[in-house]
View (tube, rainbow, N blue to C red):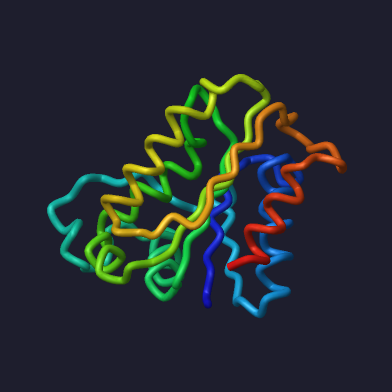
Length: 177
């Protein structure tokens, strides 16, 4: 299975990306093909809301959106990885997700699998609630099969404890696909 991992953290070695690497490790051990797209490092402009979108035509913007489209539309699964900022995904991931608009019909017709790995410094239940709800709505809208949600609370933005249970959860999510 081809899996595209969309990393939305600006912190290269932060908690979110560390969990992404554990997921990738488990998935690769099962023989899955992994494509990593670091949304924080890509040249992605915000969606312009033009009249071309949704019609499966090339985006009018000349940036890395075409790379995003190619990898996502040729994948069997997408994994969203993001820190939680103000109860939502990072801006870097949101820009990438908004750019799905020009090809969302193709995605909805594929019945892809998806998962989300989200991290937050806070440890209370409320911090993940809103992003969780957005993700569930997104899976319904795009006809994705949700195969996993990891809510890694109490994580430092810039790192994660090497003994964290969330490392095991991320690894097992990839390993058990």
